[in-house]
Length: 367
Image (cartoon, rainbow, N blue to C red; front, side):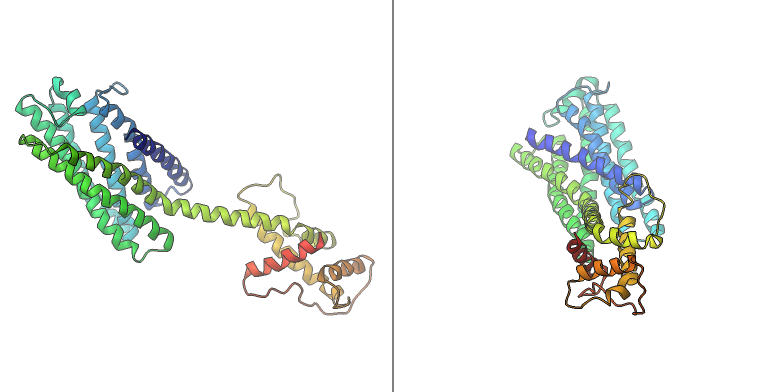
């Protein structure tokens, strides 16, 4: 059990670092802001929840206040998940209106939980945070404890049930990366719904003096922890998959840029005036890889067009790399040709990728 709790914290804070990095780059994306609220609520609430579960004070706060902060942040995370689906399904104007509407039950629930925590007597606060199943005390203390946990778990139950339905519904028409993320999220929500239903039932039955069997509560915990992990993974998955795909494209362009170097060097030496950027830049920036890649491809094609009349005078049976070298040597010797330009390194398929593959083959042959 402790291993699962530690894993939950590691995953939550790792996901928080990822979404904060993405939020800095896209601060105006409402869906990304919603995801950040979800992950931040669960991650920041994690140490408060651990402190409350162990009956410890944390940052000068008693265990019951730590429980309040953890539950409030969990509910903020659920609200962020609600907003994520709202902004994914509706236009921004309607989504903002629905987001304000959904804010009302969150505020009411947190106000009720705050009242309940204030109303709990001092002699019950640590016990209420540790083992709320076996409490004595006066009616006011027991009622306040029941209200706190019933409201906290009840809002989570409402949010998880609604999100499970919406996730399954929107996954049908989503693009592949988002669909996989929604299915992972809905699986986690499918585990959280029965867990919270058991917790709410336990809160209410405890007030009437009939606590649920311990094995049932243990089952709820085993549903809860994997459910939280799957929800975090499912929400972060589409963003991480997109960044991974972008990284693969970046690496492919970087490799192609270097593979084209032999061809580009020969052509650039003969036609330096065709360079799209004649002032050399300092260093090799990460963001400039795509620009340099496209520029190199264009410059290689322009150079092949310029040298092709000289290549046309070479024997057809020679390999293209040798014909290209011979044409460049002929031009450098000052010879003039009246031949028309011809197509060189013709790709077999349409598209820029096929064109680049042909240029890479020629560049490799020139090494």
